[in-house]
Amino acid sequence: MTSKVRRNLLWLGGALVLALALAACGKDLPMNTFDPAGPTAQSEKDILIVPLVISGIVFLLVEGGIVFLAVKYRHRRGRDRMPKQLHGNTRLEIGWTIAPTVLLAVVFVPAVSLIWQLAERPPDAMQITVQGYQWWWGFEYMDADMKVSYGDPPGPITTADVLVIPAQTTIDLSLVSMGGGAHDDEGNTDHMVIHSFWAPRLFGKQDVVPGASGLDNHIVFSADEPGTYYGQCAEFCGLQHGMMKFRIVALDATAWQTWVLHHKEPAAKATSGLAAQGMDLFLGTNGEGGQCIACHEVGGMTGVNTNAPNLTDFADATHECFAGCDFEVWNPDGSPNEEALKAWLRDPSAVKLGAKMPNYHLTEDEINALVAYLYSLS
Ligand code: CUA
Image 1 (cartoon, rainbow, N blue to C red):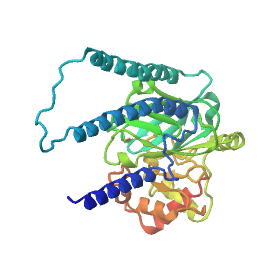
Image 2: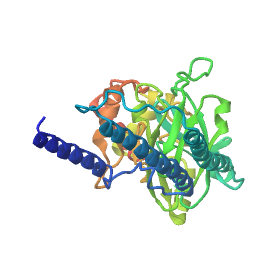
Image 3: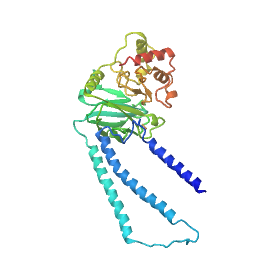
Image 4: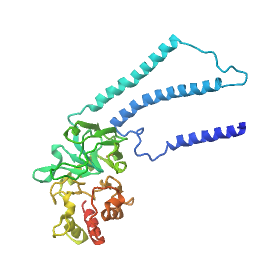
């Protein structure tokens, strides 16, 4: 290899490394662990930085040493094949035993104490249960003052795909996996798998385990500012694991009050037009259709049902996405994203392979009516 070719290759390599490094500085990173938006994520980032810096320095020293020695002691004409050999150096050996021990302690002690600290559950925190289904997330607000105004007894406010919280408020999430959503004849849920709940700007990953013991897993966190925070499942849980997403919408105090009052109310009732036709179809009130309510609940209009996402407030402004947040409910200009919902109703598995919602072979008229009904649920 001529020295010119070698120099060109070095430049090319350097440019590639620089390009990769700069690519990591992109602006639009909604799931950036290094951009925390609450105290839990902040403390996790702080604890991550220490080993990252230490291991970075160790990496440079070790790799640099290897390269240095490989170059310095490379074979040259006229040089002995075997350089002078060393055997044992007590001081060095003691040194490289003590140094890693000290480094390990520096990483280990604060990390373990943070684990205990984050596991603390403040008694006045807002209690929300997170349910992992295949492949979407459900949320139930468990506090006594978060019950809906209908039903006997009234159940908790329930949402799907988007977890709405008040900003600057400590939230205590209880995590449980609910399987595939469908039940067998004995009421057992199918496909009991482990998920993991993760919104990098607010908190790190925590496993979501099936069964009552699953509720022992908690995440305590808060969001500093109102805004939308992105999250996703972080434990392989089947075909659509990669598309099991969610959002956390944090509201200011006023918007939160309004949201709560509104979500206690039963669903809006469609009284005329296409939406009313869709409602009849959805509820099966005219003797046709009605399969929707076999799995979906529409607050006050159907029985309690957690087999599929709760649709009571499907068209609420905070309900930004549906079906595991794979699809946007609203277009960027704020208009209803009817095309996505129509495609979903036409054949769920065609747009989300393996989706648990069956293809009901709806006609285009039926789809239009159902879309009108769902967008009337605001
Ligand atoms: Cu749920 Cu991966």
